[in-house]
Image (cartoon, rainbow, N blue to C red; front, side, top):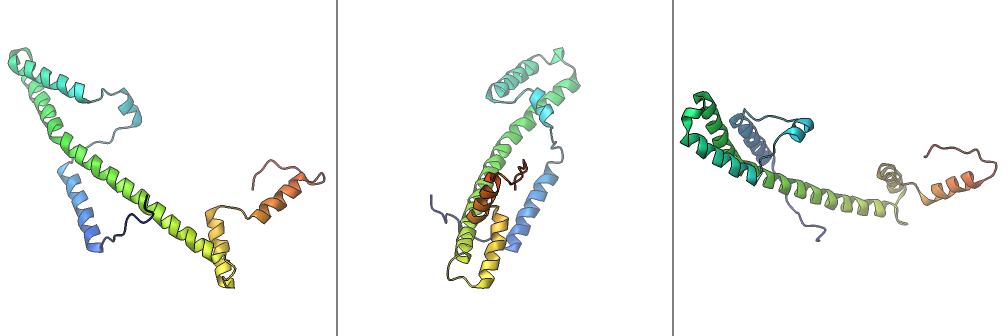
Length: 169
């Protein structure tokens, strides 16, 4: 994969327009809910077979309306209609969310690769003192210990006189 797959910018105006569009979606969908994991686990799932079952049940209920209370039928019709309306919207948003997630993952990888290049250059033999200080700072944030620190640590723990410790540095 090309390490520089994405080369783009997003203007402040575009970012504001996107945020406004998302806010607009929230306003148009005020009935959206947020289920807990437990709610999701015990709830019947609405896959293709379930949707076919719903459609068949709607046909039967519409053919025999006298068997059901009017309020029940109206609510069932509203639910089924809203499900039909929201399903393609949900798919479009899931597709967009996946692309957004994939893009941010790729951007993170690209940015991290560039930062590792900077880090490598700050450790080079031609780096001036200020770059070595920056290298030490980056090294702390990168989370790796120097080989000399590891070797010193190993020698100390292998020494018979060194106290043993269960804590890791």
